[in-house]
Image (cartoon, rainbow, N blue to C red; front, side):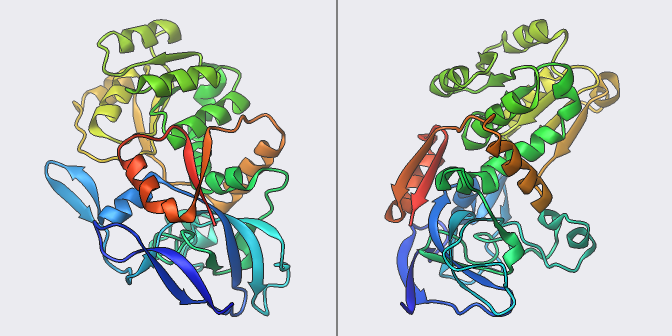
Length: 352
């Protein structure tokens, strides 16, 4: 087999098309992985559109530095097919999940283990070709992770939505140990966060989403209470349940409305962690920071070390899997459209 199939981005703002390319031959410590599963993430939608919404009719252009056709998809699990001569541990046939947040390998952030913060990234499916394909070339064997005994679809989804949720929760771990957290947004990442929070902390979290079906799904998955952020009484009810407001809030939407709700709900001395990328602009009165002793912190996926820690927790059996729907690779565009219009509860995973 000298060629492989891809669902490719051929023009920004246009549907994906199937393309065929020559199968790469791995060099050095590179590894060629046959893709078994690849999750569909909301950031794939933004990349297909070619921009992030900054609010007030402003857009962050993300079309540069990416040759077309390009293969999206960064939540990857598969099987080692071929390894370069320096990839001694990558045995052909070995099932692996792929850490996609790869940096340059030589800057201060990379050397400190924070490749997800690298300013010259090689992120799979973002900067270099990813997993909406039958095969993907991984730059080094160290990014291949044993995920047994977890299902392949779950392992794939953990590489972004799971990791983003896990890393965000770690940033409010002290608050989570003292009382219930508030999770805003119950898409794929928010549902992952609910499952991890149930395993990490003694208190079941509160959740908020404008979609009643997602709130019902969260309650069925163990949320302590669910709120509609559009309801004027929601913040008062949350404050009453938490003694003035939760000390930790994770915003998995990342819009002006979700962050306004999150900062309004957070208790005195609390922290809001923003993980979502939906877009928009946010303003708040400056005196509220010292008066409320409030922190707002951004987070972007997580580190390789956190990924290994997350998988170790998942292996204990304490983490309930979120809703996962498997679809064929050819349904990549339909899945992006469904995600764009809010028609997915949990995560869609493409089967290669």
